Image 1 (spheres, rainbow, N blue to C red):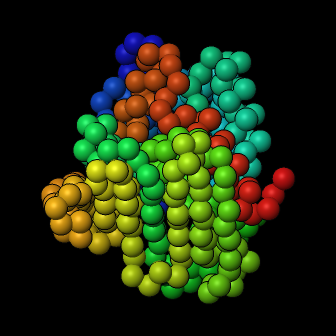
Image 2: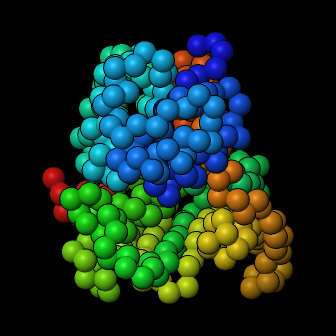
Image 3: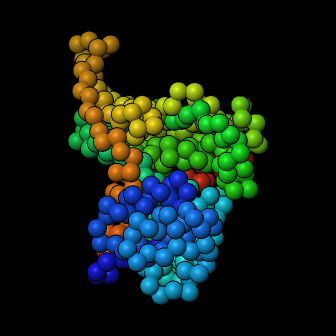
Length: 333
């Protein structure tokens, strides 16, 4: 595909607004439509672009021939049905995570994308955060040696009335904190350690009592017998994002994630000190705290995949593997 790619954004909530900011800063695209059941929100976001229409029904887009790609930013329950409809029409799809509420929905989407020759990406934007990109660079340079284990924590305390939001209603969300923030951590573990062969854990409703899990803890093991532990929480009263990767020569610690989680985003590179084991040599790197930067890089990868006719990274197959792990913890078959 040459020339600019015509996009539509489906979903004008909080994440939709973030996607608008990312799209405005991305070259090579035209945004032709913004869709939301709340027509006022759709109209407000559409006003950010020239010759961009606001719509209340995403199915109206299926009748148009001027849309090359869609970004789907809706509650989890609707991600897969909407994605599938556009894949069938031969439109490229970038879906917000988790891509669906069941792994079988991702499998169906992959088959449709292959049949119709289009790109299908599920956006795990943590992979594109400056801190994670820098950590990966350090690891690829061999600075911490062979990877041994990962320890990850991610969570916050919700907000007033949080139990009334769609994330707390299973029919819209497909689950709780595990399928919301937990999928990010699972994907990042897989991105560093590869395929997971064993997983155990619990997902419990311990505070909000909304009928979905507000805390989840997992332990995983990779093919190489590397280990990972994850705790995600909606009752962590101080927002936290900490992702530690330990190797045979040292470690990388990612602390903070955008302005909400500590105000900074930094990477600490620690080198094992052979003379003084308990006194590692550390180097601190401050990264761009603008969380929208990751969406811009994610969108750029999606555009490149479209133009180069290749699978994006990450792709829907990664979403399938992540949801298989979620289903195991939830006890779904």
